[in-house]
Amino acid sequence: MADQTPCGICRKQAEYEIVPPRVTWRCPRCGVFCYDSLEGPPRIRSPDHMVRLAHFFRRRFEEAASKFLLEIQGRPYRPRPYQYLAACYAHMGRIDEAREVVGRLRGITPLVIPDELPLRNPEHREFFLAGLRLAAGETT
Image (cartoon, rainbow, N blue to C red; front, side, top):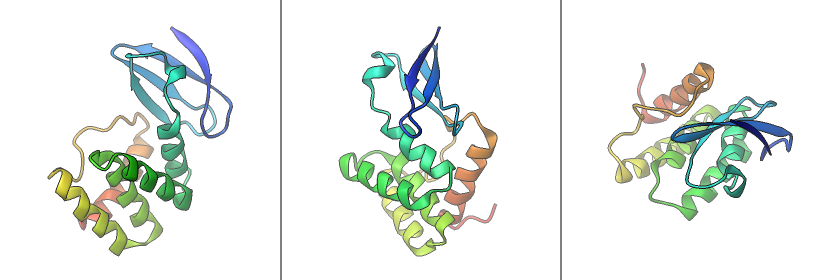
C-alpha cells in the first residue's frame, strides 16, 4: 500500500509504504528513509525525526545539532540522538564536543557504534558511521 504525506523538511509530498511491521518513509527531495511502527497512521506521527536526519544528511550540521540537542533534552534515555549528535559534531570538526557526547552516550549504553541501522542508503549509513567512528576515536 502506498500513500502520500508531506515531508517535514521540504513540505513536498513524500511516499510511504507499509511493510510490516514498519512504515517506510522516503522524502523525494532529500532521499532520507525513516521508519515508524504500525501502531498508528503515519499522519499522526511527528515528522521531527525526518527533519533531524534530513538536516544531517544534507550536511546542515548546525541545524541538525540543534535538533538533536532538543531531542536529547526531551528524551535523555535514548541513545540514537546522542549517536547522531556525536557524528554531527565530528563532521563539523568539533572533536572535543563529539567525544564529550560519546562519553555521555557510554553512560546510557556500552554500544557506541550500533550493529544495525535503519538506513537503506549505503552512502548515508557510511557517512553516519564515519562521523561516529571519528567521535569515538576509532580509526577503522
